Length: 339
Image (tube, rainbow, N blue to C red):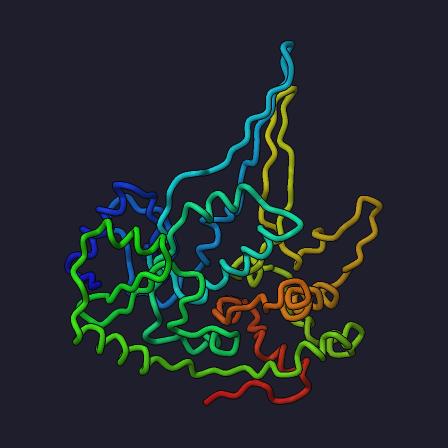
């Protein structure tokens, strides 16, 4: 099917009749995913969003339930969001990150009803990357500029329009309701040409990394990797796969609520025990945990790496601490292979 760019606003307006629609919106020099009120607010001419859209499914701050105690007894009210949503224009790296979050919030030990209800009611309409950024290394993380993992619909920008392909039943249902024309043979050819021309310039060699980490908990490399880190946690807050959170109760007298807030392993308070002991007292232990979690523990638990190569942590680190160079240091060789 084909969506002409001149008709994109009308297509989004049609979606708004049945869904909450989230799309990239331009704010200053960058784009962020927001719920839009009309199609004209969407901005698809973006490279990638400043903040990943994971917050649509896993909000930065979320009231889980409220409670109150009266003379008649206790009452608990859960706050589960069952509204139908469309995330329109999500990049392949971010769509893949959601499949990784699925492992965390829905596995054989635990299912998170708050996340999973949103997930099951959300359609992901992806947008391939015609021009990946220099900081992107998605092809080194089992993905690519037109990888479709996690998407329900894939869009390919061919200049005058977007070739739309349904990938799941949810995607087919969404497109069927839009009454779009079929893409012509020329449109399909243009889409294939765009895919072939997209090049990710940075490659990161991760061969042997897991084995290094398996044996490297006490490796001296950890003594220097963290040295210039400020502990601001920008890398974790902007990471599409990071999912640490804290639970707090907000109560007044007999009324209150339980709230889940994003947290970060880069903060010293994250692992501070009630006794005052902290098993990760310095940046060394916290950086080791960050790397181990993404490239060893997640692989051990889910057979997948918790990094999608989006490059946000590289672009936004205030002291230019580059995860590609960190991995190269751990491997003990020049693992970064710029073409």
